[in-house]
Image 1 (cartoon, chains in turn orange, green):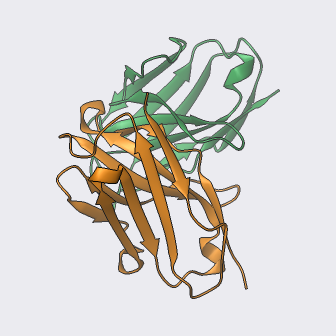
Image 2 (cartoon, rainbow over the protein chains, first blue to last red; image 1 turned 135 degrees about the vertical axis):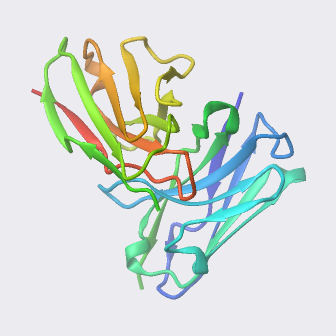
Length: 121
Length: 107
């Protein structure tokens, strides 16, 4: 059974760095074709893809946010860590981690429940 | 970056109706197009991948079609549990953009 769960602070102050952890089970990020993405959704708005890390440690970032983002993995712990620097109130959103499988045409087949992050002083 | 445009942004329909949602890419993505359903307060759920392949466990009333730049999600007979927001997403190239969503509401 595949599960993913996001964890991290619910509230961060402007200019601070957000660090979120995705802890997953039911698959290994060392298996060829497995990837984990971070995706966010501001309240009432659309989904926005942020970053992805692949089984071979390749990393990809949003064009507009790449200078603020870092993604890494700890395969032994089944975790993916995501950081976003210089947080602003416009970054208030629910942040999801999701598994992407190349065998499904690159679709995200399992998602975490999401964690709401509010940016406010 | 590839842009994804969905239409309509919202629609009202009745149980039993046939519903069609359209997604257009700003350039060809062949069949690298996925559809998700999202209910309030929940994570998105994968319905269709690779434009027309039904994800395991998804009812057969959902279907997808299209290639290149124009794609369609069809719900053949709308059920009460289908009232939700639907998003398309391209997985052809980085960044894998989502459409803005289509909210299906009860008429």
